Image (cartoon, rainbow, N blue to C red; front, side, top):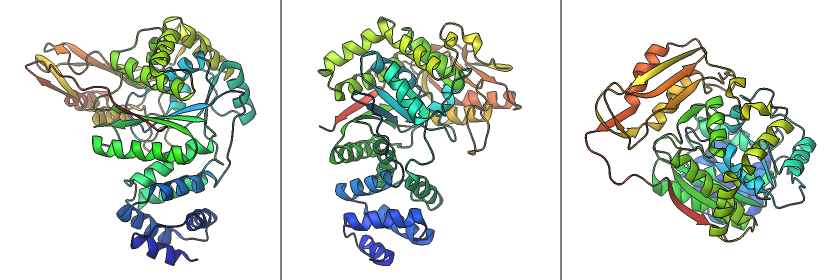
Length: 435
């Protein structure tokens, strides 16, 4: 076989065989297939798509391109993945809840790039917390506490790293099968028995429309099933930031507060639904039973204790649970006030993310440093009544940025109306079960 023949087949919308897909992935990783030919194949896939079988074959070929790890924890391993959003700190809430209910959560996460924050960056805002730990230590911690969150190693799914960089440079990112393979290859390579996917949709998400989000969720669930995994996708709203905090240490604090029972309604609901589905795929009972277990894990304090245990096992200072002054403190802050009377009808999620990036909470490049203190706390959210001059948010930073200019831009993030909206958007749009 040749790459020329394979490109031609896909250009004419002919299905590729398992052998052909395996050969292409191996050849591209080894360097025997050049970028310009792989680019042509990716563009053909964008135009002609892939079948479920082809997508699964591509996913598995990418997963097998590096280390395939299986944490031997002695229990059912369940993983959770979010497609990315603003203020999305649910892993820090959900993983302790699920671990408190007796299900293992060995989670490898990534860093943030651009305006979407990474779980690893959030955790590293905890003094002393280590995300770069050996695989043996990772498994040991899961056995002790039921959970661990660590950074992905460079030997996991090298095909995805190389293919994604090429997709990013050739305008082939927005293909459902390619997005699906990118996400699911990492989940399969890390050995999860069950996978729960949080597919974000809206202004602050990669998938801007519900139709596209549903297509991606369906595709990932089908691939998970074909790969022999128990898989559930939850489509959740990202038209506004999730919760009231955006930024690294600020989001960790909000997650701690959530486990103390003080979560904003939207953050609580998404977290409980995700935890419920993770317990469900682990065989802990009906959806109703699992929801009750998740709620009890929070109300009893067991989930908070699990978070504290994980922090301690990974070298962090567990005192942050009760004393937030242990976090680095921002050097500057700026209050934002409402420009008119009325009701908040919108908070631009994407603009909020870009503002947090300017404050220092995110990375413009992989080499950029993060300001763990930077971020935003919202006093008001969509649906709230406001009076002109009332504080609606506060910006925080320790970086050398023009916070006054940023504040002027941030004031445009909010939109208002004179009348209340009686029908707020549902935060959880749909749950798709793959078995």
